[in-house]
Length: 404
Image (tube, rainbow, N blue to C red; front, side, top):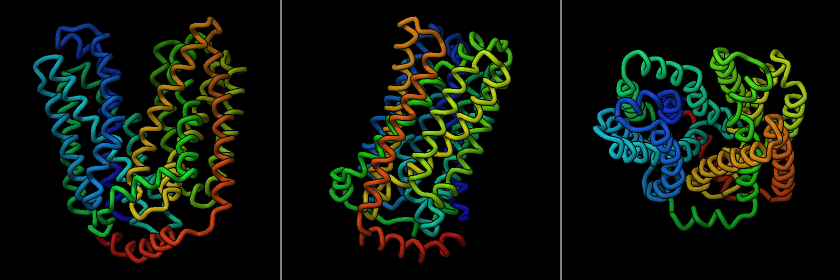
């Protein structure tokens, strides 16, 4: 695999760390800035808003440049945002800096996915994307716990400064390893034309509906484990670390499986998730079973991510595909909001903590239905000359990229 994929994984690790580490630093930031914990909690929403806005906006601007140029520029923005966050003298400055940082998030993964699959033969596209995304899952296993520990023992400012350093390392790695041949500038109108295709919206629908199952459960995983499973609060963090290991394994395994079985793997995986969640709901009060099923749930869910990311680019049938790729990142945020909201609705109705799990199972089944529709549409389509050109061009570029 090209070394440039390592550069993308490093960037993904930094992005994942800065997004999620704030959850563990809320009291420290609140105390340092003299504001309430709830006020600092709004920074999480501000970051999500920045992702939703930045993904299409910066990707649209970036189509005029090569992926290498765009990715470097995005990481410069990311680094500046984290550095500014580290030295922010007040809450307002920190909020602005966090939004600035988030602007690069969705676009980096969107453009990075296109660049990753362009640097390898077509039959290894899913594997290349999974290697990039593995940096994000490793952030939850290593970056977030380490950052939380540093914040609690020293200062949260050191954590954000450290993430800025990761940004600098990513920039250096991209400049050293990312070949110019990883892609070419494209036309914005051609990129937008991809959204006229029904197949693109079906794949985005799989992301929005199917992956909302994960967020319906994960948003309330703490009380599910403690209230239902009877697991002590002190053990929640180790359990979530196991969950993170499962997501990393799933991400790395999912790419190759997607390359072999295509979108059928996604439909099957979503049915499997529904089954695992049904078992989870029934066995949630048995600690060992609850932990095992939670980890299995995370493993399967994250195995599907690289496959969906690859297929939305293929469904676009344009030579770039960065805009639909970035749109899929926005769809993940929609899934986050949808899953969490539906889970909250069941809790507000007094249905108990098993209810979000059952909601997740139903959403997974609904996502499987959309995936089957997408698979049916994919099989009915004739080979696309644009996609054939991309495949041939990718095969010619891959040996050059491997030596870059």
